[in-house]
Amino acid sequence: MPESSSIPLSSHCWNTRLNLLGEQLRQQQDFLVIQDLDGVCMGLVNDPLSRTIAPDYVRAVQKLDGRFYVLTNGEHVGKRGVNPIIDRTCGRDLAKHEGLYLPGLAAGGVQWQSRFGKVSHPGVQSQELAFLFQVPVKARYFLINLLGNPPYNLAKENIQLLAETVVLDNRVSPTINANLLCAVLGSVSAVSQLQADIQRFMNQLLQEARDQGMEDSFFVHYAPNLGRDPSTGVERIKPASGNHWGTTDFQFMLRGAVKEAGVMALLNDYYFRKTGDYPLGEDFSARNAPASHDDLVTLARARFDPDLMPRIIGVGDTITSSTIETEGVEQTLRGGSDRGFLTLVQDLGLAFESDNVVLLVDSSGGEVMRPSVDAASLQQYGPQDSNFWQGVSGLSDQHDPLRVNWVAADGYRQYTQFFNHYLGTR
Image (cartoon, rainbow, N blue to C red; front, top):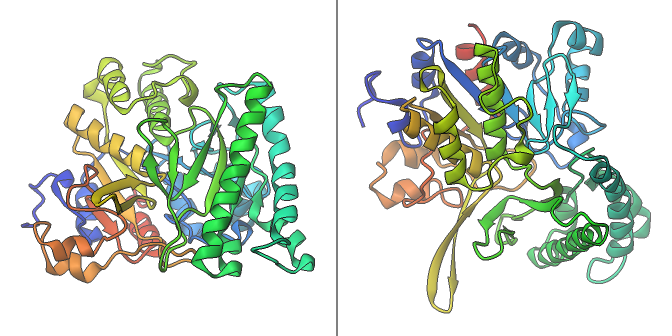
């Protein structure tokens, strides 16, 4: 494909030349970045407490006030939130005074934060918060009782510390982050059993909530995953296999806390900043957004002024594509916690003719085993060649409805350098 500024940005397919994207964005005024965090501007690590963030990136985000939002399944606040990382990087007093916190939605879309660190949980009920508060304690107790027994047989003196490390006591999205456990266990068979045991525990929590009258309050998010089962709407675990652990994050989430709904809430705020009015209403949140992708696009077309719709740059790192064989029939399953919101960004670009951009960051270079991007294959072959798609095996495929336009094949450091140079100087 010839690389010319006259070609729509959304027509590119897994382009590795971020400088080309950057040079064209420098000419743009009306754009909006909606960006994931872990694996995108920070490396993926086994222990979230060890995460770091570059201070120049934080400053670059500040310069894009009103044109940048985060959209993450992690959280802003708490011991394992992103705000403490900002505090360590920039100093808490300076971060509060100058507004250096990362604005946008966390916990899948139910935890809002301004750049000055003002946090709220739109649409969340006190009964739900009380239930979520108990989940980390129950999760630690569950793991302590599980890991000392077969087939794990871990040393009892290590189990307490492991449980404390892998259970994330997030306020509205408590999580078992099993990365470290997977590394300790080492084998695919043991990790597969662990996935089944944690899934069973999460289902027990859902039943407890139903027994307490919260029938539709929660769901379990698996990351990475293989999409949703169309018959049940439940996310599919990605099994451990070969060099990949598959699903390692098990998040107990509030119903409606999905990133595609968060996109709509962020656009509602963007339009308010532009016009002084909320096109979806002041009380709109991810929790009362339509559930289906098509309904979200329909709502956007009905309520958002197309003349004010910005070019959206959606940035994530977690998408999956796996082919499985059942009774001799091959089926491709696609998922990943960023797939839904990136697909919505793509389809809003088509609906509003805003030439939106989907940018993927290769997060395989961290401590978590993930499929990687083979940049050489992407540069040598074209999208019509099967060798091209081998370069993104495990992430996407030739028939994937989500078209990744640009890729930071060298990971989060490449992306943050791109961000700082082309976007943070505006």
